[in-house]
Image (cartoon, rainbow, N blue to C red; front, side):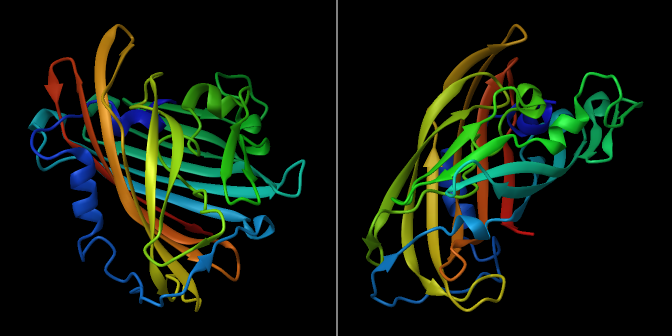
Amino acid sequence: MRTLVGIVVALVACKGDKPTERAIKTSSSEDFWPDAPVATSTGTARRFAYKPDNIVAYRMTAVGGATKRAPEAARFTFDMTLDLAFDRGSAANERAAFIRKLAFKLDGLEDANMTMTLDGKGIEMDQGGEHISFKPGEPGPFDVAGMTEKPFTSLLFDPSGSVKAQTVPDHPFNTVGGDMLNDALVLLPSLPAGELALGGTWTVIHDTTLGGTSAKTTVTYKFTYVGDSACPSGRPACSLMTFSTSSAPVEATEDGQKMRTSYGIAGKVYFDHERGIVDESRSQLEMESTTRGLTVPVQATYTIKPS
């Protein structure tokens, strides 16, 4: 199951510019998000604030793989969709996150190819010609009911603008797949405290797991308030933020194999002031990792929006 959150970074490396530089270049290109609303310079300072009760459901999609620059034998593609539902937690500023559906497809790695679907009806998986199916309540390696019926993370929205993820350590998905809301990507980023002028910046620090391994590293996301525009959803009032981050190379040993991994992420976030939520975000992930003497470049594009 950790493959589901780590396969895109398990065998990665490349020569040339650094991952973050490549991610910024890609996310800044016109074809990265061609229909994204254009932000205008208003010169007005903004105060950003979440309205937790309006955070109800989000969908995260990811498409990527190792193709053009990868050795022929190491090329693969993947496609993932994660539907999340949010409900009130133990406090008014807390939202509990539930997995409603997870669909994943990996193609190009022969015996490692797989498709998987997890939802309230059960889990279906095909890998290497073998089909696995478990329904809620059936004995097996996965607690299917627990994966979808129990919250796996809680998000705490502080009045200062910060958002903190609290992983549920004994949740069956977290024990086998890792916390997707606290690893690598920022689903709902911390906002700046107080008013922020146009062009202003702030940082968000995250501890994240690297490359589907147990290695942890601290990364700093830098955000910039670019300007105001319409929302990608068509609503009238959003603010555009751009962001980027990078990790230093981290070494880990998994299953007896040494791995050295680092990454870069860059993207855009549109924040809806009236609803107090992220209207949509899109980010580019570029990975560099070395293991078993193999070097393979991997890229992925993530999109996150209410569903």
